Each structure stands twice: as structure tokens, then as C-alpha cells.
Image (cartoon, rainbow, N blue to C red; front, side):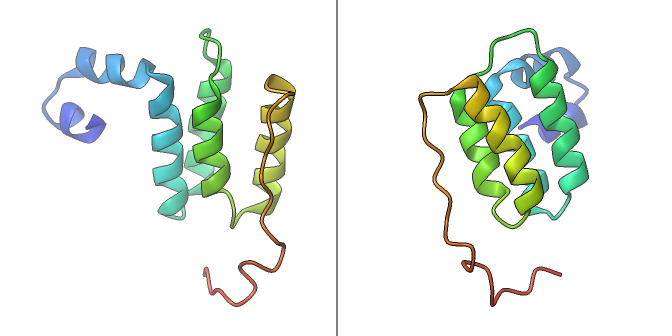
Length: 103
């Protein structure tokens, strides 16, 4: 949706969509799924700097997208547990992706 709004020069509408905290998770996950972790982390940093208090859903979406990036996942997991100390993060078995070729 953001791409469609941007292509049609609907800047104000795109900014309204962007302000939705769920969108942070979706955009970050899209970059991760597209093998663009640097861009994903830039969006994550913007989410963390947002004046709005975070909600847990974007973190869960991002954490799932980071399964193949264990170092980045640990950082996000630490942030999540700091913000939501009573919540649980599932950690899959370490050998889950042992036979996958990600490069």
C-alpha cells in the first residue's frame, strides 16, 4: 500500500499509514524477506525512536523475520524483553536452518 501511495504522490496518506505501528513490523519484515537486513534495521531504528509507545505485534513480526539473522535477532529480542518483560519469545532450535542455503 505504501508503494502505491508513493507512486501516486499521496504523501500525506502514506505518512498516515506509516504512523501505524503495525506498519513498522510489516515493512521491516518485507525488507528481511527480501534479504535487505540493513534497510530493515534502519526502519526498526525509526520505530524505536518514535514518540508513540511501542506495541508488541511489530516486534513479533520482526523477530520471526530475523530467524536467519541470529545476531540481529538477539538485539531485537533484548529490546523486546526490556519493553515487555512479562512476555515470552519463542526461540527455535539452533539447527532449524542448518541445511538451508540463504546466500
